[in-house]
Amino acid sequence: MQRRFRAPRGRAEVIFDYGQVVLGSILVGLGTNWFFVPNKVVSGGVTGIAIIAHYLAKTPVGAVVFALNVPLLYLGWRYAGGMRFFLRTLVSVVVLSATIDVSAPYLSPPTTDRLLVICYGGLLDGLGMGLVFRGRGTTGGTDVLARIAHRHLGVGTGQALLGINVVIFGGAAFIFGAEPVMVALALAFVSARVLDLVQSGFSVARTALIIAAEPRAIMDAVFARLGRGVTVLDAIGGYSGEARPVLMVVVAAHEVGR
Image 1 (cartoon, rainbow, N blue to C red):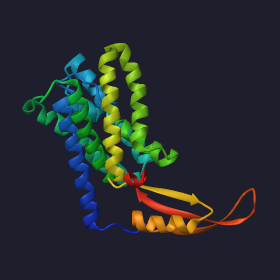
Image 2 (cartoon, one colour):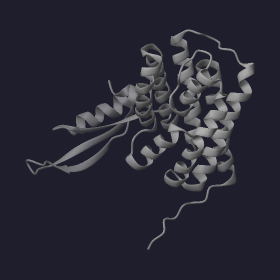
Image 3 (cartoon, rainbow, N blue to C red):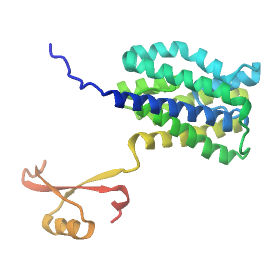
Image 4 (cartoon, rainbow, N blue to C red):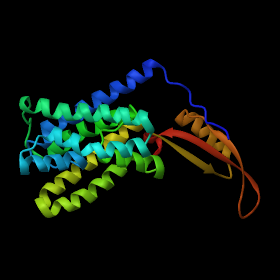
């Protein structure tokens, strides 16, 4: 039986990964204390449950986040990446929980406006989680479930998180009413979009496959007007059986209209 070869990662790469995990966890924790807890906004997943418990029983948010993540850490180790994944997620959970509880007495909400809470809270939350995922970890909670869905089902991490949170918010609507859940859903959407942007990068490309009777004229126009290269592929018409060229052009997203 063949064994897959995996190139060893250098010490600098590992340190950089853990740096991203720690920084991302701090950002998520700060966003929680700046925007979510003081404005009674229930964010998604385990943190949302911890915020609910905080207002119902006065429990510390970070401590509850850590306690709820203990069983999910096992799932992460078992199904989402093994010991390396477990260690990075453990670091993230510890840093996140500590950041929430340690910074809580010193932070005051910069705004109470719902729209600003959605925009800036979602930005910090998505940016933080994106950095953690780029460092090959998660912040625990539903992030572990989203990572499993991404790994085994091919679902985008942000989309998986959004889907899981929709289910959670649906149950929360019976307790808190419609408006807080509407805010939380909008917040989850912004966070998911920022997370996917951090993971995929800011440069998004599109591939066009062009079939034409006069391919040379199109090639000349792409060279002259877009400054892009063209790859010519040999293809056969499925119905006619005739050979015909297919032009493949890769352009930036903003060039699709041109």
